Length: 247
Image (cartoon, rainbow, N blue to C red; front, side, top):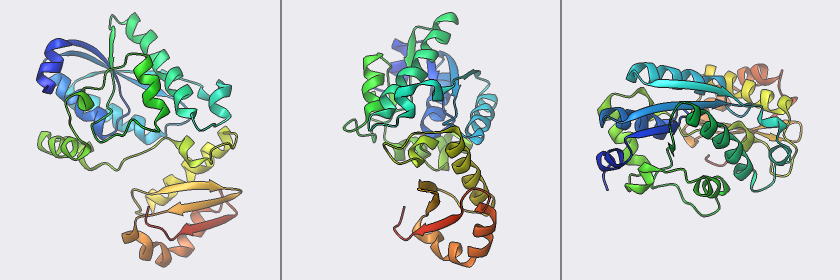
């Protein structure tokens, strides 16, 4: 099945929109194929501000409808306890809110940006989406991540080479209670690293320390900017560690 056929079968859809590569291209495709699509960005403590900014910029570029919904995800005990299947409870809450808002706006079919490269095994979040009957057009049409990037570039979407981004909760070790303070520390540290010119990295919490995971090509730069990194991340972590494994 092609995306054109999918949107012919589902001409009115509500899109779970993160501002990332996949959902950005899906919003573009829906608009291109004439679907009545409304994008919904669920803003919780797990999403950094730049993701919302990117979502708003892309929606404006495409002339698409975008609705922001605030979600205090830290009120969900099952999420904050941070079990292995945290994503299951998180997706249930987020897409539950999306479904309520979409219904208010007259949309019954909900879609998301899961692509054909995403493995369903060991992904509790995808199990939640399946239970809620959320459709994944990219996956259904066999479109991989590489193809999404290629098509996005051809379409002139600024998101085409945007690094993959997992929510801030993934920076907290499984089983460790998630707090607003720890999420803010991680987001602040990652913002500072980005300002120093680094990209496609992670700052993971390790006790009271911050563990930097970088691409191999950026390791030398990290060593050269050691003093700058230490100074910029000092407000967030007493100790900053560099993971020598390629991220």
